[in-house]
Structure formats: C-alpha cells, structure tokens
Image (cartoon, rainbow, N blue to C red; front, side):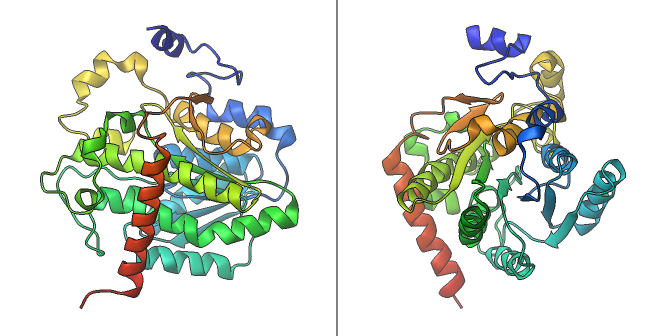
Length: 330
C-alpha cells in the first residue's frame, strides 16, 4: 500500500525522481555530466517509449542509431528528432529482431561504420496474442523480446568494451523489462516450452520473455565483472504506458480497465524516464546487474534473482544460437 501511494503521488525516491518524472527532466538534470560524442543504439525506437528515448537522448547530444524493421517509420522518427534538434545525428539500419540472421547482418553493417558504441538499449518488443513462430522456428515473443536482444548484445559487446577502454567512459547496456516478469513461477519457466509452447498464452509468453531479459542482465553483469570490463548492464521497468504493446493485450488489459486505472498509467515521457536515467545519470556510474523502476533501484522477483537460473538460461541460449546459426537443419 505504501509503495502504491508513493507511486500515485509521484513521491521521489533516493534518486530524486519518482513515477511522475519525465525523460526530458531526467536528461536535462544530467546534461552537464553527459560526455560529448556518445553513440547509442536503441531498438524499438520507431514508436512509443523507444522513440521518446531516442528523441531525448538526441536532444542531449547523443548520436542515435535506430535498428528498424519498418524503415519508413524509422525515417519519420528521424525527421521528427531533427526538426527539434537540427544538429542531431540519426542513423537508420534495417533489422528484424526475431531473425538471428537479420541481427547478424545489422551488427556487421553497424560495425562496418567504425563508430564507437557507448549505450545499447534493448527496448524493442512484441506481444503476440496468437501462437506464431519466427523464421528460426522459435515462438515469436521469446524470439523478438529476448533471443534477438541476447544475440545483438553478444555481437556488439566487444565493441562496447573496446569503446569504454579507449574513451574512459563506462559503457551502459539496458534491457527494458516489465514488472509482469514477477508473474512467472519457477515451474512455468522451461526453456523448451519457451521455444515451442504446448498451451500458448500471450500474456504468459510476454511475462516469460521479460523475466528472461532480467536473467540475461544478471548473468551478463557477472561475465563483465569477471573480465574487468568497463561496461555496466541493468534492467528497467518503464511502468504501464498505453503503448501499442499494451493495447494488444486483449482480454488482459481492456479499455474499460484503462479507464478505471487511468491514474496508474504513465505518459510516454514518464515511461521513458527510467531508461534515460539509467543511460545518462552519473548516479548509476558503475552500478550493474540491477533492476530499476521509477528511476530508482528496485526489487525484482526471487526467480529473477536466481543466479543458477540465470546461468542455466545463458548456457541454453548460447547453445541454441550456435545450433540455429551454424548447424541449421535441412
């Protein structure tokens, strides 16, 4: 009850921000401490929270790379950003996060540009009401929200470590998760069932993918610490924002529920605030393997904190990616 009242009132936490803080407010406060010539890749930046994150970071002087499946939408976002910030540099490259081959091509194209990489924001996501499969024959929500981002991060990690070593500026990786991850129980998180579920439920699949995003953060943070890399990785919960994904939750969150719970909803700018805070704030310098909500470090579920579960998912994921890419079935 106390946390709910704090959320509704927008009372600031230890960071000085709360549920009502906006991405622009956070970035403006961090502006004096943001190094120049930063480069950020932001997936899912053609709409919603991702587009707002791109706009605000560009306004702070960050070079923005938008990986997009819909290049037309990406071009519209680029135009909007540059109308507001004429000096902003925005690069668009094609990607389909549900396809490992497409992620591989994107990474090759980006690396060929020989740009630094300071910030990677794994924001893109889908919610599929019906059971669908990617071209790799993996359930679509899991393939897009988790598997594609895991592989994207793997392919770009050396570039981030190299950039941090050369510039002295710590790299930051952010996985956009959701509080809905806490709905997943241990007996409902079986890797083979995530890939090819027998009894599909869209909300459950979405929650499982968001749990996987946090477990990815936990294990990657351990690996980065072991190699003394100047790169941090954290997960964020943006809050409940009426974006395209949330509107797709038919039968889960309806318009009538939205009307009743309107006071709980965040604006797009409020939804993007935590991502921008973790990406830019000097207060988060060196913090890694954590989960943030409302611009403050928060608690995730016991399952999301399970180191053995994180390690197991990491190993299973790496084996799957290797098999799909290098040992394709006929």
